[in-house]
Length: 372
Image (cartoon, rainbow, N blue to C red; front, side, top):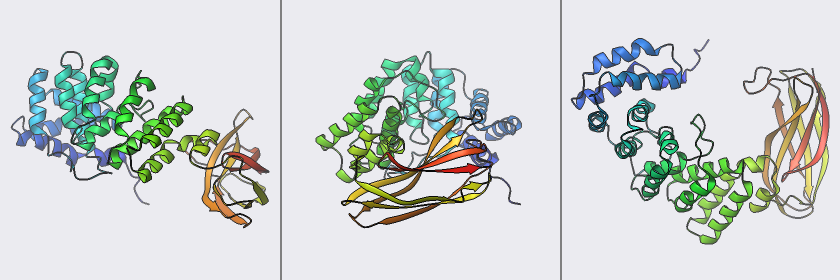
């Protein structure tokens, strides 16, 4: 049986810890071996985030005393920046994340400017999107002023930090109190960036905002279309990526913004789920045929109303097909859906369920099935 993959061990292990220690030894800051030994002695039982904090804690025992001296030591030990000629998918190495935690722990209160200088340098090796949030909470005005300055930075990882570090719902990141009124002006200056790593972050930031202010995001995207500061093809990709949550939820305004008419004239024929009674762990075949009166772009999803432990139902949307339908020509779509009994995100419960066909955000057909 294959050994289960461990992300924490892949990212933080004797080799990667040794690499970090060697950077400091090469810079003449401290000898790597004692640092590595101390880290490894306490790291094994820790989960991923705890390992980052532990390494930052061990660094305290080996770096010079006093933040200014420690900051100089960290700066001297940094490896070369990530390749600035690339444009995407260059995240750097997680082993440098503890450097940002060290800056949070020791520079936040009394060394704001030097800390931000250091985060600017470190993020060119590994993103400081998590560490910058501590400074946004403690020094919002001062940190936002620095972010505004970074928007024109030569290195795209620093520009991305402006958007990613201020995301309202950054996964695994500490909460921040910034409002869209504070962050959207940053995105207004970033959306025209020529680097996909930056524009993806901008789109993800907008997707976060759609959770609380969907109309505000739609207004901004329409304004960006009028301004024309981004390549039309890239902006189209950004719009789709930014609105993906609203599209999945069937939001009419988002559908219309992307050219998918919620009121499209479409006929549903032969919608079925087979079998209509199945056990948890089994698979069902969903099949349907659609015909539009005219040529029309379609987003076809299916929605399952899952039974909860309390007997109520909760819908979950699944993607089926995005297509350009031709008027009068039937399109048949099928999908095999496995009702996993050991899913990590939710638990299946027996009972009568419903499956719906959703076209451009509008439910056009329903079937009932039983899960035992």
